[in-house]
Image (cartoon, rainbow, N blue to C red; front, side, top):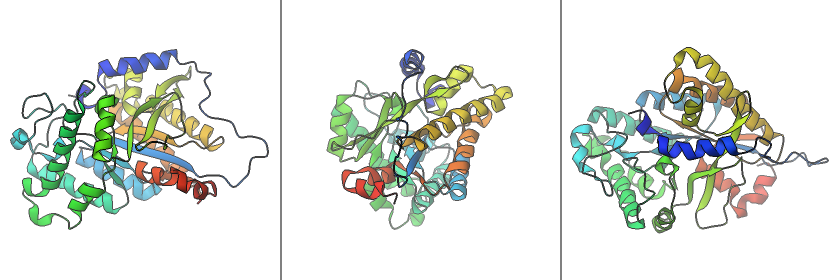
Length: 344
């Protein structure tokens, strides 16, 4: 079950190979130039969560945000809003009815609690984004298949309060959030294709966050859909590059097998990698730093603790903004660059 929640081993291997082969000497960001103006753009830090299932981690992430001032992006898998007894209400493209690689909510009560977390997070300034429904690898899907999954996502979210027996608790702005407030997408397994891009344009999404890039890279906002990429960052005693995501660290540190006895060691390594990546950008060209996580505490919670430590240290800096993808895009669009360069 654990493996299916994240990048599949088949999907991880190409990334792992890239990480081994990418030379550590690759420049991940430009160093500051002599005489560089002190008045610089804020350093953006973008933390996101894929899946967004465990209600306990909804609580924890929201508390982290209140303490640090961060605003997160939650890439939601919509089957977590369908109780297991109603699983046949969902059918993903090309799979049997009632199938999901990440399961379903155990009960309607569990789903209703999650709905409240989603709404409260929205009110607190966090972003709710689209991670599909059943967490299937859509690399071979057609654009029509992707549009079907997008339609599933919207349908499930719109009807979720009623489907889970709490129609009387549905907030007044819920339908508007589903229709107009969900603008970003991350593909399960970070699996990309031209068909997905076509479907995203047809859907009217503002950005995609499924890319993997060699290091923190300026965000491409030139197209109709902006492209964000999780970076490779140096990690470990040999500073080998790795995707800045908890599951990839989990694979490297313990071959995706839980080893809580070394949790403190893995936390320290992860924190050092996150902090060094932050410092390089903060002291350099201030490219946004993106870090990805899941709603599972792998290796005894090592990666969440490392993330918390980083945010506690950096988010309150006056020239740092820990923001969602949607907020980052608003800051980085061409018509906002003048404002961003003035440090606002």
